[in-house]
Amino acid sequence: MHRYVPLLLTLALSSAAQETPEPGPEKEGLRVRLIVENNPIKIDAHTIKLDILNVSTKPVTLVSEYFAEGTGKETYADWIKGNTTFAAFPEVVPSGYQTAAAFRTSPQVTTTIEPGASFSTQWDVFGGFNASNVNWMLSFPTTGLFDVRAELRLRTTDNRQISLWSNAQPFVVGGSKKAPKACTGVVSAVDKIKDTVSLEGAGESNGAQIGDRFYIRDGMQADYTLEVTSLDYLGVKTKVIRRNIAPAIDNPDPKMPRLGMKAGLMAPEKPTQ
Image (cartoon, rainbow, N blue to C red; front, side, top):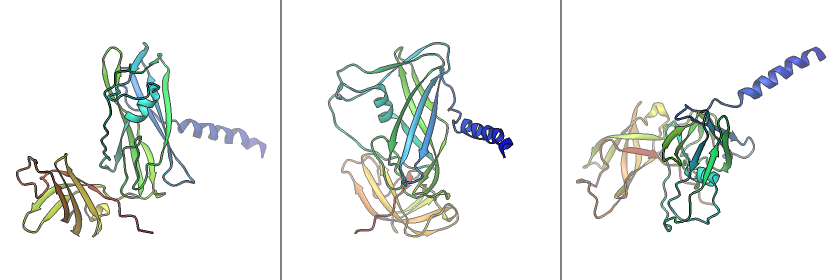
């Protein structure tokens, strides 16, 4: 029995080593590693861990780009948490919000990463099915197993702008590891008389169903809610059930969304208690 212990230890160590993923591609001496820990007990609770690695032979000093005034006690880790964006596969239309605040006059915050060292931070998010928050700009409209990447735009004290993306990590939404339905579609045709919009890429083969709803935002000028009325293998036909159009819209025909616009799947409405 004891003769198998070294082998078990070797396998355990090998498995532990594989848990640290290869970071994203190097650019100007920096790489980014993303680790997502999916809570096995609490559905849709995740821990985000982010490492910025300096793989060059020189130290690099990164500086924040806060636009608004804050408390004056912000750290570079706070900047990373609030300004890291995420991309998902299958694609998810990001959430969006606007805030108003005074212009920043206090100094920006910095951090220096020595050669061969890294800057690390982590935070918790409840960023799963039909949820989002200020540090997690993805609201998943359906359950399933997604891949996510972190995207950062960093600035150095010598005014270099460095855009980086991380490795991909599995992200479990709603406790399901099944393939999610398509979360986006592209406007391929509109019928102004019938008030219908056709979407490519969100068909039956990608899990679309009658009654699914999609949302299109045309900047700050208009938004549309569409409901699926029929579908084929690759696309769906929808009915415009709500539109909100600003008076000064520059779209010459604002009643309908423009061809080529991207529609995002909406999460089903939560049942009332």
